Image (cartoon, rainbow, N blue to C red):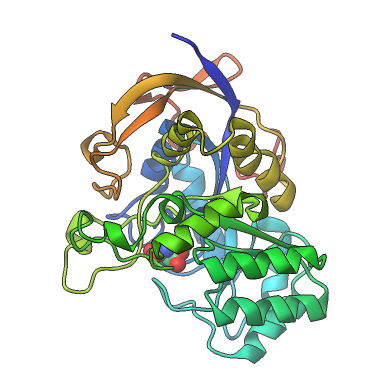
Length: 356
Ligand code: NCD
Ligand code: ZN
């Protein structure tokens, strides 16, 4: 067996559901899934219950992470209609500030253009402001960021017109970075059938042309990120399914499979899951190594995954490339399908001494 050694990867967009909705996922289960997928740093979104928007809710979320995390992490603060000036105090302790400009899971959507502006104007240049913005919202927030000369990071870009606009913004020298998910690269509306009702996700899956445009603009994509958004299989099959797909354990195998197929260079994969996210989010260099068998062919099965949500949009997909082990120095965090890192062993990279 040949073994490929990669740096521990960073996923800048993860929903842990902890605190508040731990029947969907906990810090312990999300980070077990992360390690099994070669991800050793997760940046966690603020749409927990309660949402993270002030010191008390941040402390509560940090306590849950401290107890459960098996890998390193940092938490985002969430922008609300009322916290533009007070959230600034959280900046040194978080991965960034998340702005929800379009409808999604949770109640953090910001309806007013004034609020968008207030947050973009008040938040410091680092850590980044990260934005869920689709279509015209994306264009509007780019305009505001340009006027304010402030960097922004665009989450889960999914459409051809969006990636083309970001390409134009970058051509003009705007300080904009973006991420794209494996599901928007590999699935589209034509997959709705086999997802049998579970295909609801924000942003929605695009057309085959959207998918093609994302691949054609790989140079514009700074990061790959899962937007790991676990909801239980039962919830996904209900009358009002919540939007979101799990993705932590499948991202690296799916992308390695693209490397095998010749559609993605290994260096381009690593840049988008290691160097670029670390640069954009000011994270330390990897202290972990991911061992991969690039030749193993296997079939994705929810029953074998570590996420608590119990389903995957990639069920039954055959991929080539599998994580065989994750190590930090002489310590083994994951090996042969088993997660060995203890709950609570991960470090908060934005609190205290990140070198531990
Ligand atoms: C996310 C969730 O469930 O928290 N859902 C989703 O469809 N992506 C929210 C989000 O990231 O928009
Ligand atoms: Zn998300």
